[in-house]
Length: 314
Image (cartoon, rainbow, N blue to C red; front, side):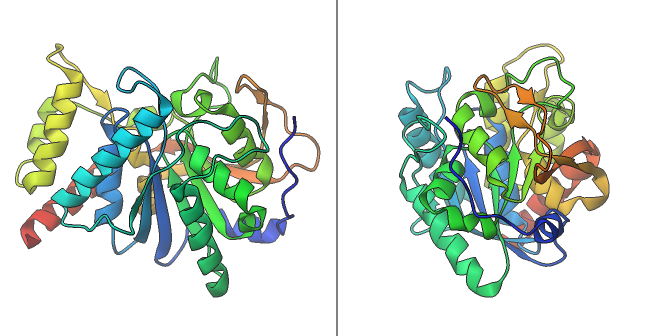
């Protein structure tokens, strides 16, 4: 079953929106926050980057792995983790954090209705009045974002989607967690024509590795939130010799902030088959942008500079 037809977007407008913005952007972060430990860093990063983005909502995404019993349980645990981080940063949760889908898309045409998907639609419609796009930074299964597009296809004109998901096109396989959990949702995003930047996991975001020893140094003097991030990471990694952890999800906020540290290219958007493998783009296919390199040190330096500034103010 093919995706639904979406309104056509002017190619020049799409290309313009795929350039880095030059002013403050309104944004949503869609996150499976309890899936492991990197989402916690990304949410903190987004909340502190106030001179670059105005975070309008945080939406909890479903996930299923050893830390959840079902996609619905994963979403609920993520919603609760969002609340813990907001409390540590003295940010209200009411009207800001939203529960997302309790399951994955059954096919490319059927949304999973949720408070998160509806909030994305509402904010996108608000942005239409200003002529500016709503940026959706997605760092989990992209169910909520695809559902929003299916609930109101017209918002394809009002969004820019930045997603950590899938691998590089030259990687031997595309079995990546955020993608394979909900392949129909990813197919909706690739097929919709929405302005779309993909940050691949293997070969790109995997560069964002850190270690407990480095984090102990970086988290020093960053207050309760820094201690929380350090403890979450050390608990997750354990005591393995020379252990490290990729903090994948900070890549999407880093793209917005560390402009000199990223390389990317415009490509015809590939199609995805039902297993999530890339297929060649047909003739006349719309463009998307794909990140090809991240300068790791710039992103970590920026994140922890913001954390230290926050601690100094509090």
